[in-house]
Amino acid sequence: MNSDFDTRIKKLVLIVDDDQEIAESMRIALEAVGYRVLVARDGNTGLALAERENPNLLILDMMMPKRSGFLVLETLRQTNKSPSRIIMITANEGNRHKEYAKQLGVDEYIRKPFPMDILLDAVERIIA
Image (cartoon, rainbow, N blue to C red; front, side):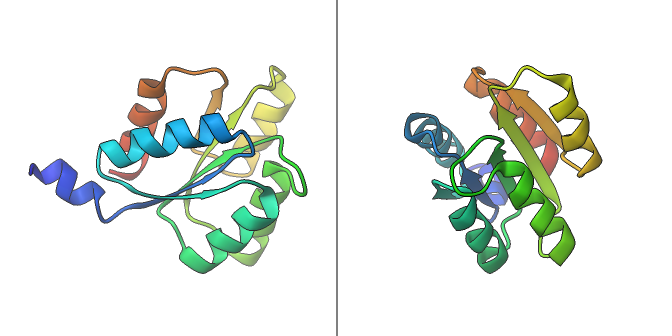
């Protein structure tokens, strides 16, 4: 095992995305390079997991049932229980949403669909 893998294995990434195929693809890709991964399928579950597990990184979809990514992020920022590092992913094309995400302290904003190496590079850069 190399030292990069040893460092990653200790890092916990929480994926919050209602699209099962995308969430599963991200989980497999992240686990393949050594991260521990939890997956939530809606904003309420994601919020509860983020507060309980305190992940190193949150990968957050913007548009979800029950509670949007923005509402999850706003709540986490208010309670200060947020992981400090956040990647927001979205199929939304608008720049207004991107600007608001940046105001909320998102580290990276990735538009769907995206090549998995874009996500892996962002995760590595942000929490390695």
